Length: 209
Image 1 (cartoon, helix red, strand yellow):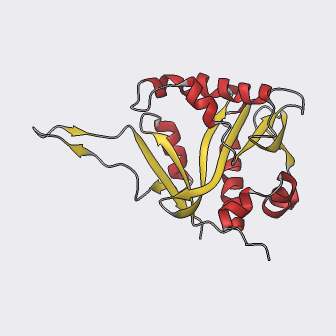
Image 2 (image 1 turned 30 degrees about the vertical axis):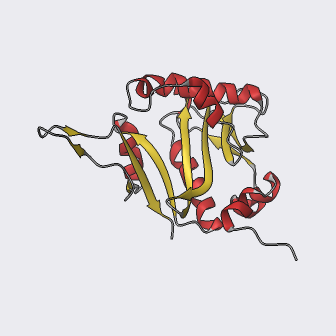
């Protein structure tokens, strides 16, 4: 008798179509979104790091670079393009791509992974990036809601993400979605002489139970 995989490993081993049928609304791996201000129609599709095309992955990287490279560069993390590209190909990473047509380049994306964080089963949001044409239309809230619903259906404890403290707009956005500072988020460090070093990023989480 075959040994059953643990929850996270079992879900990550599922084919994309099976994953979509089990965990996405109405069993859809592709659905439409209409921007409320521009009335432009977009297609949201689900991919894995192995099914996303090299061209689409490159466009996603360019979105990260355009929106966040400067923030990375002045942070303790630093901006390392090769390292980021390698991370984007992690085997268990999944992508929601937002496109005008199936053949057009992505104008936005969210990437996430079902994984473990401090031995807890979680769904971790890696990246959320949009071109200017997609902003201020509720798309971020929609995609985050999809990720949270996936997490609930899978049965993980919480949704998690990392945000730069300097990105005040993003932090306010996640606060509105009821994300709180996680217990494992780094704390301030007090050095000799009373100097306080505050972390430049925060780990946020939301209980999905």
